[in-house]
Image 1 (cartoon, rainbow, N blue to C red):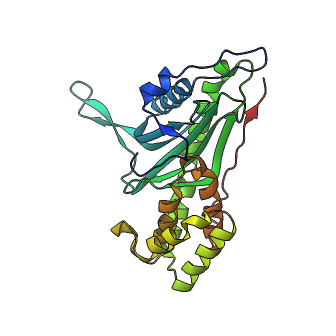
Image 2: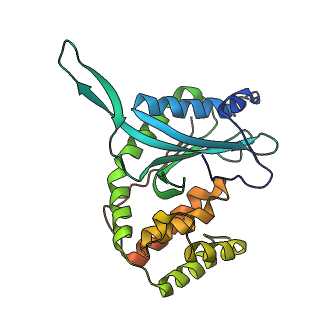
Length: 271
């Protein structure tokens, strides 16, 4: 996944490298799941529900204890052709949108957090991510995690597919909302004040808003401006879900998006 960077002290890894990382032995109360195993189960769950992984990025902390990553997902549908004798079928994207769905995941062997998923949208042209809090799921590393995690992943993916109408409505609303220079400046200040954008990135954000990197975002509307913000936020993969959730809230309030009430699901179970 081009353009995504990791927090200082972390390193990027390919899928096979994640699989090769050792997983600590479990205890009576703590049953860690391998980073590669967790990612593999997410990908298997997506395939079960006809979703294609368009691109992905993953990384681990310096000691290998924590892992995190992003998956850019395209829902697919079965298309049939021909007749019963000579025909067949194939999978095709449901819609040719300029964005798809996205999954952010993280896992810890150090008891710092549960195995977690967050779901949102990903913009194809630039890999920017948009997590608005619609769907989250977590499973603590306790007894029976390996027996239960697949079902929880499937539940999260079904919910992910269910939020697409809300994401469609939000993005279309943003595209229709013109933005003034005054609003842009105000949003920059508020984003820094509210901890959405790090203060050290203020100069980069101002430059991006003045001269967007991608020509697709040079219209002065809320969607283009949102992507100027997310272009800066993707410098820290681990914090993308939290920061873009706050950013969505700020833009929703500023531009009057009410739409369909979003789904907020937190499933953290203790066996």
